[in-house]
Length: 192
Image (cartoon, rainbow, N blue to C red; front, side, top):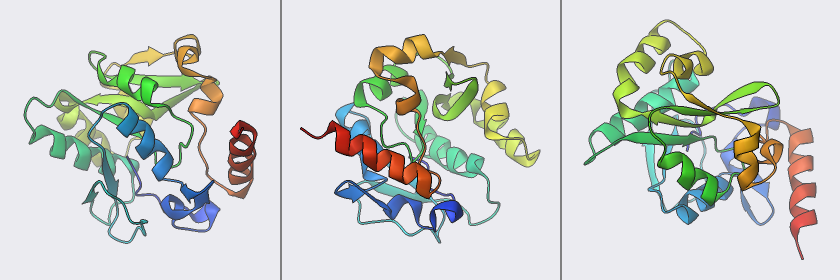
């Protein structure tokens, strides 16, 4: 779970913003648990997190780039027995599902969701063997999607994502107050 952003457009502390009855970060963490994945949260030391019952890795405060969180996650995974890959998901993706994350975890190589004509590298599979290329991309200041593209990912298109739900909803990010209102409306509509 990548949670190192500033959350400025949302007023700060994005992981702790309440959505429904729990902090925003708890929604994708629940999906990871449903998938049977070992969840870790990667965040900057200054990121305020709610109380969590998963391991938290603190990435360096600088530079401020989402690749820092992925590098920390890949290094952590590389030290584990048989570490094939990291399934990355942003802390602000409350509608990602366990079945989708479980499916991504068993793919081969790199994979990246692609929705609405846009790559979604924070809903993707990052092989541990790609760590040198990811570190190089950070050193060059390249964007997240460019770093994952260098790993030649399988593109998970909307028709494949559709097996797990509405692709736009699965990849929905809560970035600002309007997004938070939308997410709250969707959650309310889901309640019986």
